[in-house]
Length: 109
Image 1: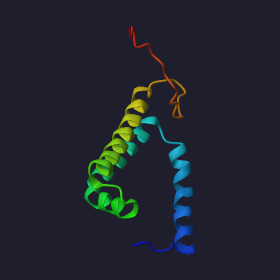
Image 2: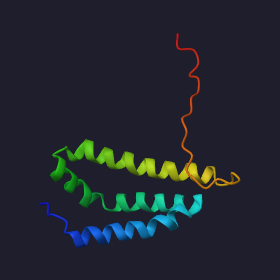
Image 3: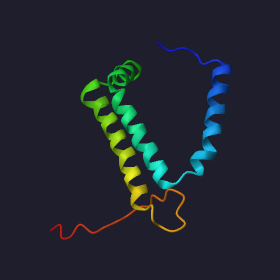
């Protein structure tokens, strides 16, 4: 069941997000990588609660669709953290720099 969020609850959530924005913006890549890994771990730990809720809200099948979506999301969070750690030593690097990369596949014929 859903319920409406009160104006007070919304203001509280917005204030918490604003308070967290500056420390996050000033965090190091290693700190951000740890945060991403912790978020992935928390999602994995809550899977038994999250998947039924997502099914109730979307009517998508729990397996394989929602379990797969959760696995994909946590994989990506950990991947982004790994990218941050790999680039940690880059001088002056303070922002995430996910750029497109292309590489040849070799002969396809």
